[in-house]
Image 1 (cartoon, one colour):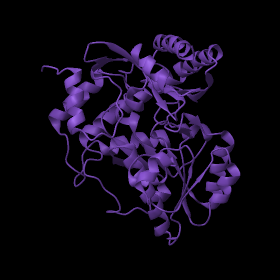
Image 2 (cartoon, rainbow, N blue to C red):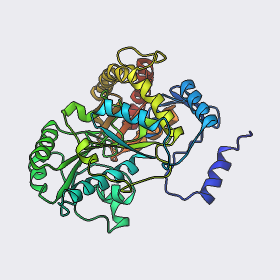
Image 3 (spheres, rainbow, N blue to C red):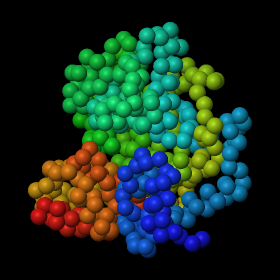
Length: 410
């Protein structure tokens, strides 16, 4: 197949693709391991992994093999019938999370939509139909569909699409007393990312994490942990809510679970699942054979439950825990050397450099130097490398950032 030039590709998109994205001036055509290659054949060290998705890196032979095998066997049947893989994947997720059941969908935003419905259905089934409200955190980001957008605080995303779903109260992650005051006998669920991603790689303060758990327990309010970006090993925990000893009723899953194959899941506790009936929710593609086969393979790699995983100490999650500490130390070195780095945020291989200036010039110059990162919350350089990242890869990325930060500050 002849590859059209970058100019032709960009021109065709400009005329026929809805212009909802501000794309970087880069046409990517193939990948291998930690590197992506553009239409000119130039390699780029990938420290954004499709916004936290391609956790096994690019061109992973094992994943490619199972996808090809499943494509030749059976791709899709709909949820009118059983197939052998959904139950296996749900059982693996239950073992990792402690939540008994899973609803499979196609993305993190759809997982959030499902969880919002399940929360309201739970209280309706309890005869408490007035418990329809939600409490969410400022800086949180749950997706762009209407329900997910309704529990996302940033007015930049919200304002053009109002009125949104009513009954949502936003509180500062730094104000536990506001959280206590916001939860009433009309609150269905508290929604929180244990480590906020799009909002700037913001760790949830421990006092707020404890308050959320206390309020949920005392009032019976459901706890919804949004783990789309920080979950499934990204921080060195199977789910980051486990670092707080939370026992959530609902958990959203996306991004990492398919390593590039679109799949998401809403994880549901036993008490909530008991109130969900046939027909309460559904999806045509969710949990099909291709998606679940890919996700099963990814979870094997994450947990080390197969001899084919080339990482000791608990598979890729254990590797992330080890290499993540080194990553954080190297980024702290950048902070010490560069005045425009205010502080380092995050955990595992979910990291952010919070700058004193707009982050876009750093992102642009890093790309020109062969490193892919991105900007979030205006002043944060976000890094979400594949889980296979090595200390050598980190050294290479930090060396590029070191040069770029010097150039930008000059």
